[in-house]
Image 1 (cartoon, one colour):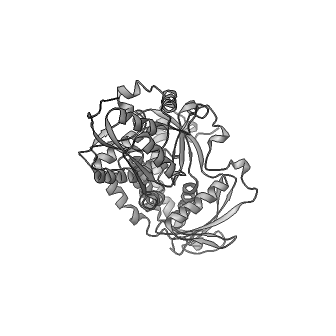
Image 2 (image 1 turned 180 degrees about the vertical axis):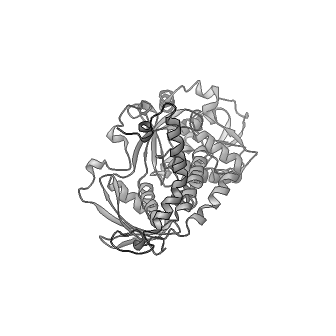
Image 3 (image 1 turned 120 degrees about the horizontal axis):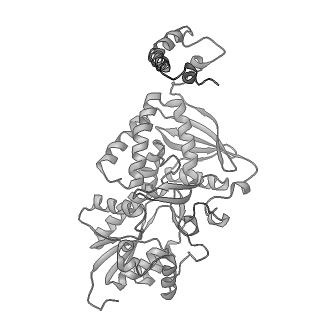
Length: 428
């Protein structure tokens, strides 16, 4: 503990109310800093008043709570839905999406509080330290960052979560994490993540009581539930439940409603090993209820309404690049501005309705409808002549085969040098 009068300045701490940041708050005070605790309401199920009381009890000189749910949905989540953002073909980027709005709100609060520093509770091995700090520097290039988990005087004292639990108990800091459930969570409107503790063994099956948001698919209702989602320019604008004609149109309410629906039916769980930006592999479990529904519906409608080449280019460049940018923490960057500027152009025709049903962990598309005109049954029907003459396909195949025939002839020549035609044709 530093002596009175040796104050080092004022720091705003990204505070969750959990084990790490509660201990960090007290530790920063011990080091001589004045600490303002900052919490962002991004839809997590949290007792914010209890967190406020805990932060002040730990010695914080102030507490900021910012309601960021709407900008989280409208500025981060829905553009990700529009481009089907996904990391390594499985992770829907729930934590990555929330970090930019939290960082932006935190910098705004730091300016109001005249803080000299910003601080966070991210570990020195994870992605979030990168996401937060790059966001801080993109928004306030001259800001100074305190990252306790990268300071030897902190991580040598707190070698692991057991040491943090002991420190919390010694100082009367109430925490929900216990030795019996030693995993970390991060929750927001989009998802909840679980990592560390017993989950660090990739072959350890997660206990049933770990999953917080969704019911087990085995225990989900025996009857499926239907929902209709209408999109305009790739954005969900109306959700309708045909069973009772309930209609939802507000952007945030749509997401909350779909979350509740998916949770009832066990939709949105994944258990993966992913490649972190810093170069290590990490096991994580995630629940992304509403996001899983919206992704299935949006991708299906694109099949009906989006031009083939536009879709291919979008998938190759916008989807892949934005997913990587979000995961690695470069949201506040020129490349992100460039990529997201192209999203609206790719979604001009993604207008229509998708009918789905949810059943025991599955999202099942039952039908889709749109007036965009890219789909014409006459062109693909097996039951009528229409759209174009079948004889025209002969010329299409002939032209398309020029390159393939040349490649085949070259393979046959190579066969004379030791590779038989049978090898080329892969005959059994």
